[in-house]
Image 1: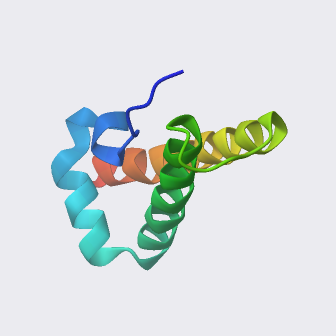
Image 2: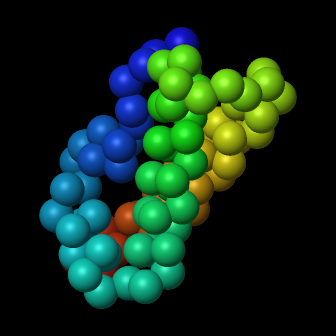
Length: 83
């Protein structure tokens, strides 16, 4: 269990410029990124002991985060193809 937040730039270290460009031009990406950050912060609070949650809740949040990472990866992949 890591107590380090998983930021998008950590998940996609080679896509810094693309992440920035998508934040500026793609409303759907912004929505997904906001959801990712919200879930990620909640997971971090749980793992840090700041917020209590059942194991089931923590696992559900982690699965949601992974699903968002997958969706974001598809958008990044398409953006790389266009570049």
